[in-house]
Length: 190
Image (cartoon, rainbow, N blue to C red):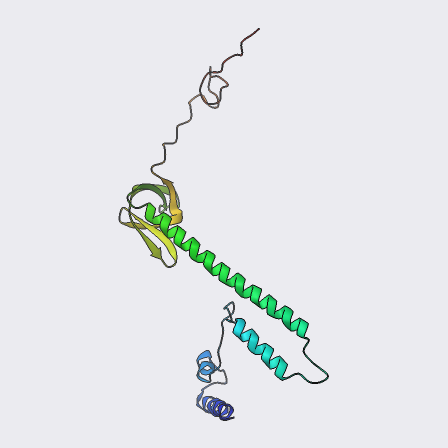
């Protein structure tokens, strides 16, 4: 039990040396206690589960025995969770590789990207992609010596000009009902 005595000794020294009664995270980590932040993954894995199962088997009594079928069910469930985690990791790696491959295919092509101006309006920037990469986990492209997220691409190539509306309002005066500005044909009569 020297480990237990060391912790008690460390706690006593920390308490005696501290200016207040509050213990900080650094104090706990100095004592060998792992501290997790809210929302942080605690990192339990299959090995941890097996250690818990061994402890349960070692600490069972005659009147409180572990049910082997329950343990087998839990073992199967843990195996499924471990397999699903491995599949998720593989899929994420595949998506990342596919995204980087797509971004690399854009090098040398003309793209239109969206950029917000000072007033919050979308401005179209047209230019040739000179490079790609990742920045803080986000795939980026370089256009006109500026970095844009891959998701900022509005079009590969240039966007067509937006046609102005006719001066006559909707349909215009003397227009046809063809919808696209063309003419309509009347069906032949018999």
